[in-house]
Amino acid sequence: MPDALKVLVDNLLAQHLLTQDEAGVFFQVSAHETNTNTDAAQPISYTPKNVLVTGGAGFIGSHFIRFMLATHPKVMIINFDKLTYAGNLDNIRDVAAQYPDRYTFIQGDIADAPTVGKLLATYPVDTIVNFAAETHVDRSILDAGDFMRTDVLGTRVLLEAVRTHKVARMVQVSTDEVYGSIPEDAFTESSPLAPNSPYAASKAGGDLLARAYHMTYKVPVVITRCSNNYGPFQHPEKLIPLFTTNLLEGKKAPLYGDGLHVRDWLFVGDHCRALNVILTRGVTGEVYNIGGGEQKTNLEITEHILTTLHLDVSRIMQVQDREGHDRRYAIDCTKLRGLGWMPLYRFADALTKTIHWYADNMWWWKKIKNPAFQAYYAQQYDKRSPI
Ligand code: NAD
Ligand code: TYD
View 1 (cartoon, rainbow, N blue to C red):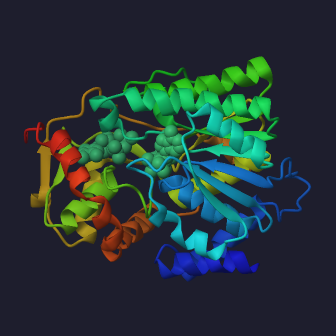
View 2: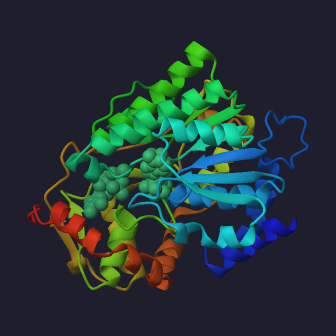
C-alpha cells in the first residue's frame, strides 16, 4: 500500500471509522477506482494534476481534499473557500500539516469574478471541483439571498472561468434535492427537476447553468447529484450532528413533524470515492446520481442515535414541521455503478462510528456551537412549538 494511503487508513482506523477488515476492502476497491488502475476494461480518461477545490473547508470538501491527496500521489490542491459560518479550517488542519508542498489554502468568494479570474491566471489549474455553496435548507427558508449569490451566481463565475482559462474539467457538486420529493421508486438522472426549498432551487440554478454552459460553450463539466451525507466534521446544524451534539449536551432532539420523512443516506467517504470516479471517468455534459440506497426515516435515525448514546425516546421533542418539507428522497445510481463504484461503508456501522466521533471530538463542535450559533438556533427553533 503506498505511504499516503497507509496514512489515510491509519487515520480512519484511529478515528474508529474503519475496522481492520473494512480497511482491506476499502483499499482493494479504491485502488481499482483510482489512477493506479490498469484494467483495460476500465480505461482512465482523465488525470487531474492541479485541482482547485472550492468550499474545501466545509464538510464534504475537506474529506474530498484528504482523499485526493492520499490517493493521487502527484496531485496539487488549492482549497478556495470564503470561510462562511460553515467553513472551518479545523476540518482540514491535518491536511495542511501533512501535505505542505501539495496543498494551499486561499480565502475567497466564488461569486467574486475578478478574484477568481486572478486565481486562474496565476495558477495552472486544470481541474475544478465545486463544493462551495450555502447548504442548509432551514437557513434558506429564513433568507435565500446568500443561496442565490453563491449557488447560482458563484457557479456561473466558475463556469466562465473554466471557459476563459480553458480548464480541462470541472465537477459541479449538485444534490438530489433538485428533484424534489418522490412518493415511491427512485429518481434517475432524467427525472424532471422540481426543487421545493430555496436551497434546492439555488442548487438547481447552478446545476442547470452547468448543463447550459456545456451545451452552449462546450464547457467540460460533469454534474453530480448526491443524497444526504453523514460523517465526521459535518456542521452541527444538520440532522445527525445536531441531534447527537444536543443529546450529548443534555438537550432534546427537535424532530420535525411526524418524523417519517425519508432520506437516502451515504457515508461521506463513499461520496468522495464516487466523485473521484466521476472526475476521472465520467463523461462531460453528463449527470451522475450518487446515493447509498439506505433509505431511513428521521425517526429511525433518531432512535439509532439514542440507542448509541444509551438514551431513551423521552429525549425526542416533536416540533412543528419545516415549511415545504420534502417527504421522501430516493436515488437510482445505476449509471454510476456502471463506472465501477459502489458504496463500501455499511450504514449501521458507519453511523454508529460517526456518533462516537462526535462524542470523542467535543472540542470540534463546541467551538461551532458558539453565541452566533445559539442566536441562529433560537431564531430557527424557538418558533417551533412542540406537537
Ligand atoms: P458545508 O456547508 O459544510 O460547506 C460549504 C463550504 O462552502 C464552506 O466551507 C463555506 O465556507 C464554503 N462557501 C460558502 N459560500 C462560499 C463562497 N461564496 N465562496 C467560497 N466558498 C464558499 O457544505 P457540505 O455539506 O460540505 O456540501 C458541499 C457541497 O455538496 C454543496 O455544494 C452541497 O450542495 C453539496 N451536497 C451536500 C450534501 C450533504 O448531505 N451535505 C448532499 C449532496 C450534495
Ligand atoms: P437536514 O440535515 O437539514 O438535511 P436535508 O434537509 O438537506 O435533507 O435534514 C435531514 C432531515 O432531518 C430532514 O427531513 C429534516 C429533518 N430535521 C429534523 O427533523 N430536525 C432538525 O432539527 C433538522 C435540522 C432536520
